[in-house]
Length: 89
Image (tube, rainbow, N blue to C red; front, side):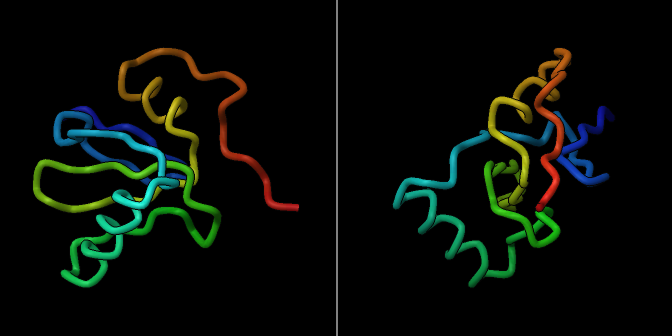
Protein backbone atom coordinates (compact mmCIF):
# COMPACT_ATOMS: atom_id res chain seq x y z
CA UNK A 1 0.00 0.00 0.00
CA UNK A 2 1.41 3.37 -1.01
CA UNK A 3 0.65 6.14 1.47
CA UNK A 4 0.81 9.78 0.42
CA UNK A 5 1.37 12.71 2.76
CA UNK A 6 -1.50 15.19 2.34
CA UNK A 7 -0.04 17.68 4.77
CA UNK A 8 1.01 17.97 8.40
CA UNK A 9 1.78 14.29 8.79
CA UNK A 10 -1.60 13.05 7.53
CA UNK A 11 -1.47 10.14 5.09
CA UNK A 12 -3.95 8.55 2.67
CA UNK A 13 -3.72 5.53 0.43
CA UNK A 14 -2.87 6.70 -3.10
CA UNK A 15 -4.78 3.79 -4.65
CA UNK A 16 -8.02 4.80 -2.92
CA UNK A 17 -8.08 8.42 -4.19
CA UNK A 18 -10.61 8.95 -6.97
CA UNK A 19 -10.29 12.72 -7.38
CA UNK A 20 -8.49 15.77 -6.01
CA UNK A 21 -10.59 18.89 -6.49
CA UNK A 22 -10.59 22.54 -5.49
CA UNK A 23 -13.00 23.38 -2.64
CA UNK A 24 -14.25 26.61 -4.24
CA UNK A 25 -17.17 25.49 -6.41
CA UNK A 26 -20.73 25.15 -5.13
CA UNK A 27 -21.02 21.44 -6.07
CA UNK A 28 -17.85 20.61 -4.11
CA UNK A 29 -19.06 22.63 -1.13
CA UNK A 30 -22.33 20.67 -1.27
CA UNK A 31 -20.42 17.39 -1.48
CA UNK A 32 -18.35 18.36 1.60
CA UNK A 33 -21.49 19.31 3.55
CA UNK A 34 -23.21 16.05 2.53
CA UNK A 35 -20.12 14.13 3.69
CA UNK A 36 -20.15 16.00 6.99
CA UNK A 37 -23.84 15.26 7.53
CA UNK A 38 -23.35 11.55 6.70
CA UNK A 39 -20.27 11.19 8.94
CA UNK A 40 -17.96 10.48 5.97
CA UNK A 41 -15.88 13.68 6.23
CA UNK A 42 -12.26 13.51 7.37
CA UNK A 43 -10.77 16.93 8.16
CA UNK A 44 -6.98 16.71 7.83
CA UNK A 45 -6.43 20.49 7.73
CA UNK A 46 -5.57 20.89 11.42
CA UNK A 47 -7.66 24.07 11.51
CA UNK A 48 -6.09 25.63 8.45
CA UNK A 49 -7.85 26.73 5.27
CA UNK A 50 -9.06 23.87 3.04
CA UNK A 51 -7.20 24.03 -0.27
CA UNK A 52 -7.92 20.56 -1.66
CA UNK A 53 -10.72 18.03 -1.34
CA UNK A 54 -9.92 14.35 -1.89
CA UNK A 55 -12.72 12.01 -2.92
CA UNK A 56 -12.02 8.45 -1.84
CA UNK A 57 -13.40 5.22 -3.35
CA UNK A 58 -15.01 4.39 0.01
CA UNK A 59 -17.25 7.46 -0.25
CA UNK A 60 -15.21 9.42 2.29
CA UNK A 61 -14.29 13.04 1.68
CA UNK A 62 -10.87 14.18 2.95
CA UNK A 63 -10.00 17.85 3.40
CA UNK A 64 -6.38 18.93 2.99
CA UNK A 65 -4.59 22.23 3.62
CA UNK A 66 -2.26 21.61 0.65
CA UNK A 67 -2.92 23.00 -2.82
CA UNK A 68 -4.48 20.56 -5.29
CA UNK A 69 -1.30 20.67 -7.41
CA UNK A 70 0.84 19.68 -4.41
CA UNK A 71 -1.42 16.73 -3.57
CA UNK A 72 -1.48 15.68 -7.22
CA UNK A 73 2.31 15.83 -7.41
CA UNK A 74 2.69 13.68 -4.32
CA UNK A 75 0.21 11.10 -5.60
CA UNK A 76 1.95 10.95 -8.96
CA UNK A 77 5.34 10.66 -7.23
CA UNK A 78 6.76 13.91 -8.53
CA UNK A 79 8.96 16.22 -6.50
CA UNK A 80 6.94 19.07 -4.99
CA UNK A 81 9.54 21.55 -3.80
CA UNK A 82 8.03 24.91 -2.98
CA UNK A 83 4.59 23.36 -2.50
CA UNK A 84 5.06 22.37 1.11
CA UNK A 85 2.72 23.29 3.92
CA UNK A 86 2.46 27.01 4.43
CA UNK A 87 3.02 28.39 7.89
CA UNK A 88 0.21 30.37 9.48
CA UNK A 89 1.31 33.90 10.48
